[in-house]
Image (cartoon, rainbow, N blue to C red):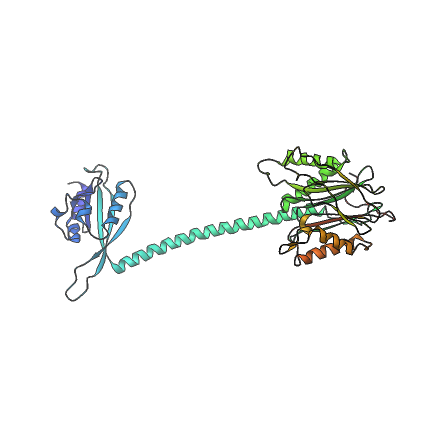
Length: 424
């Protein structure tokens, strides 16, 4: 008799050994037989499934299969009703089965050792409660660690967002229009900008005005895809790219075409695809002659309100920038007479709506016509924005940019433009 067999034979606990994948009982001790109410010859040589048949035997077999296949096993609890004492109900107890592999070197090293313990219902409930409490405590510890990591991550993201917003606002602040509308001789210019976000200057709208080396004035209004730091950086980048291109080109169509090539060449990679699109309206005005040259890249068409009260839309078209490297951008010409008002805007104004009723270009022109006698463009622009905002229920859902320009040859004492590198 080997050591394991001797231990089983003399153990006060119910124990047995099995052999093979069918778990045939090879030996049983008296306590094992007593617990199951059978004689040794009724059990030895029979599979466990037959020797201990009854409720819960399936869970015992699952345990034995797992241990036989190399798992560490565990314990399963099988219900067992004891025979009732006369005049009383049968009591419920549980048989707790544990199993492990026979030690190496035993004559049947492919077998298992089974140990069965009888547990009263109250004892089992206590055991299960303690097990559940331990598992819940471990789960809570895990969840606490996860929550701590989520909180740390959220704080880090919030801090990064604050840094990005500060950088973006610094970039866009450099573009804000803070000078007199009399900055250009014979031409009044005023810009109105209002971001959709109440707590920041940051948006994707682009605007600029500066004098070219031939004395003409370039006016720019556009919209860059996105919001925040990326959009603010691109507006600054595009603004200075156009100032650089203006040294080599005078024709608006040529400048827009060159800008489109620049965007396609330097921003159309896999990470930026669809995020480097720009709509733009570019106009060059000769304040002396009133000649206007206009080009557009998917932007809202410029509008002209004549001093006589006549209203017209400048017919100009072109593909959004950043889509086709070879796109062409034609130039449209017209004449701006003394007192005529030119309006350039992003779709934040015209697409302001009440339900499905858009503010539109007609309301924009009519509002401007109602205040055409205003001497200062500030009054005209403020009236337009107030009307559009009221139409939208008191707020804009998108960034809003409006640029107004009016020929005024009787204007005197023009002041020097204070807009950074005006003479680029």
